[in-house]
Image (cartoon, rainbow, N blue to C red):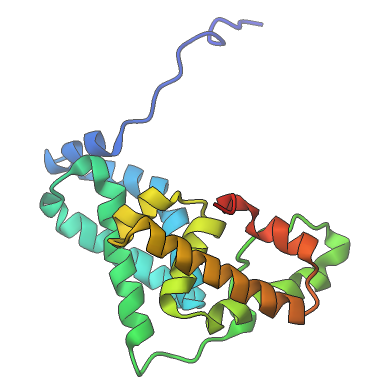
Length: 206
């Protein structure tokens, strides 16, 4: 069997700035690279903020449309992700502030963290999702956002400070208070401290 391709150099995906430049140069189809690269984390952020799959999907789609339409306004293409995130974040915050937004259906909210349980624990996993969604819904918007970004998505505090235009110390305080509130709510719901540690481990706790 010919294995001559085994040692061929793998093609390195282009950086965001390169893709942005290509799109602005007329290669509109290149924008699909940015969509494929960023849509999953953006969707996780949106659905965790608004706790509604349909609304989150619409917001992410809208964010990409706005980004494509206003791409020339991205002053630093190397920071395209941060620029796109700000567009989505503003949409989420507007939705949360709206007095006319739909009631949240906690049972329909997606899983906030993967508890890595097998099929035999499906019922308990669903209950855990409901407890997580309910606990998240009780948090103030700023605390919820800090908690999700640091403990769920694993975003470092320095990057969060840049994205959210807040100090590292303020964000640490928000995340700490959110974690304490989440831990208390989950403990009342029967979630053990050991499982809470697994749920909150992604951000490293610092």
